[in-house]
Amino acid sequence: MRIPAALRSVASAPDVLSRRRWLSTSGLQAAGLGAMSQFWNAVSQGAPLPAATSLATKTRRAKSVIMIFNCGAPSHIDLWDMKPQAPSEIRGSFEPIATNVPGIEISELLPEVAKRMDKLSIVRTLHHTHGGHNSGMHWSIVGKPYRIDSTLINPGRADVPCFGTLAGWLAQKDGYSANVPPYVITPFPHCDSTKYLTPGQFGGCLGSRFDPFVLNADPNTKGFQVPGLKLDEAVSQQRLHDRQSLLQTLDERGLLTPSEMTHDIDAQRAKALGLISSNAASEVFDLSKEPDAVRDRYGRHSWGQSHLLARRLIEAGSRFVTTVNGPSITWDTHKDNFSQMKNRLVPPMEKAYVALIDDLSERGLLDETLVIWMGDFGRTPIINKEAGRDHWPQCYSMVLAGGGIRGGQVVGESDKTGSRPLNRPVTPSDIHATVFDALGYDAQHINYHMTDGRPMPVCDGTPIHELL
Image (cartoon, rainbow, N blue to C red; front, top):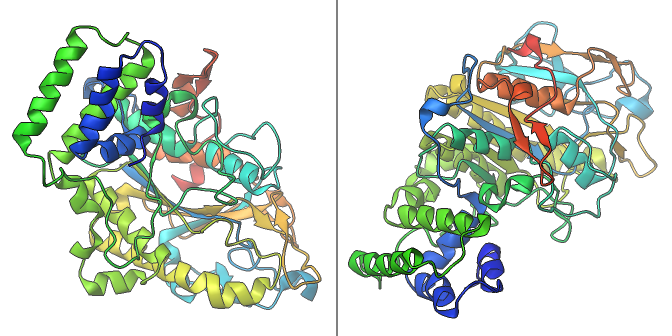
């Protein structure tokens, strides 16, 4: 079993005694805690503060967020911001259709979404300036530019954290106590490939204990389950208790010099022990608990089952769940944009999205769950020679629903080719500010600290008042 990164770091530290290392890794792994230590290396919140210290000071419209992220960037002109009067080399082959809100039209590729437009709001003037996939995804999910515009970049511990990380961090400061991680990414992380992961999506400068739990598995796989969420059958509760007591004895004798690293490990271990002592977490991740009809409704594919898992996690208490509709940059339609969108990309995406919106609504959860649908950037108004569209961060669209969002409206207007915002330009940071506002946080006045000690506001954008 692979030892978590945090434990590998501790194992190489000069102040760690070999007996302590053995107990912390080999001994606990035998009890099934190795996997859970790894699990909580990704999601452990550390010691929560009491609820009385809540940083939520505004009216809380939403309790949680689901972000659907189209990794690779879908074409805004072919989905949300049709330009039927533009020349053929811009407008493409799809026609706009009416929605159930008079005056709002979207793509013919989205007939079921069109029937639910009264629940959605489209923002058509989102923009930034990074055209690389990883830097573009960073700007979208962090709300700030990365230091370079590139795809060939990776996460680091000095990163500015994304709004999923920060939503989990804020929840933990408010006394988060659910049996599931506060921030989850399914099925795979934001990335250009398995070699280049998007910076910002992990704990960054907040530390490893604020990393998300990344599923790193396809929930549509037959017999899918997350390993390590239950105590190994060969280990009794008494045996586990005895091992805990022995470790506590060593802790009290000061065999490991206290440090931020050791506090992180202790917090992760405590959370791991708590999780495997109960079946609550494993039950949430077990999609076999859902009726076949429900699973079919979402679609028997990775995206559909990830959306269903997101709903189950939100029901169980998670605060932010990201479904990355990849793998990798699957929406990167430089070639055959129209064929790919019509036949491969949009149908499963629409099916999963509509099922999620309807399911949340029927369960009375949509009003308290903010659902975001976005991507890295948009795609070029002009169609290239290979019937594709290239990267275009200068103007693109995204969609919000639920969680106090006023549906049935469009915010902003792009120019006649969808190239630039014509009015009401919006930045990713403004989207983040809107999300935090819906969650009840005055994000401009709540700070965390960078690795060099500098205070940084949770968000420096301005909430979009039309949406709330």
